[in-house]
Length: 221
Image 1 (cartoon, rainbow, N blue to C red):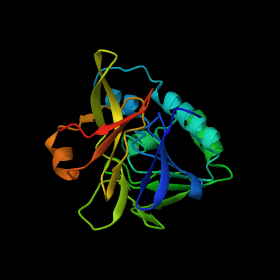
Image 2: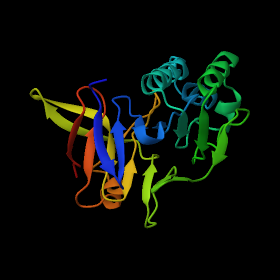
Image 3: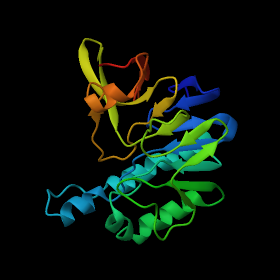
C-alpha cells in the first residue's frame, strides 16, 4: 500500500496508516486506539440526539481491512474500545461474532481505558500496560521516562492543502511519546493547539496527518 507513512520511534520501525492504525512490521503488530464502539447507543441511552447506528459496522469494516492488508498476527487496542461498559454489554450478536472472527488465529490485547475496563465477554488479554521490546503501550500518556505509545486525546491538526484548510486526525510524536488518533467513526478530535497537547508534547514534536495523502508536519501549536 503506497499511502502509508513510515518512521522510527525508540529504535522501532513503525508505519502510520491512513485509517489511524499503527503497524509494527518487525513484530507483525497492529495498534488501534479509541474505537468507542457503541457510541450511538450510549448517546441515545442518555437521551442525546439519535445518530445513525452504523458506527460499529463502519469501524469494524475498517479494522478488518487494516488486519487483512497488514497480515497482523497481534492486535493491540489502546483503550476506550467501547464507549462505556453498558455499550460493550449491549453489543449486537452480529458485531460480537464479527469481532470474534477478527480475533481468530491471532493474539489480541485489550488495554483498559477511562471509558471501559476492557472487553467484557470477549477473549483476549486485558491489561493496563503492555511492554514489547523498548515500547510501552498504555491508554493515556504519562510522565514516566519510557517510550510510550498511547491514545486518549484524539489529536487532530490542520494544514493548507491545495489552497484550503484541511483538518484531520493525526499521530503525534516526539522523542518519547507517540499518540495515536482516535480510530472509531464517531470519535471527535482535540486540536494540537489545545493546552493539554501543547504542554504534553516536546518542543520538536511532529504531527502525521491521517487520511490521503498522509503528511508529516511540525506539530501545530
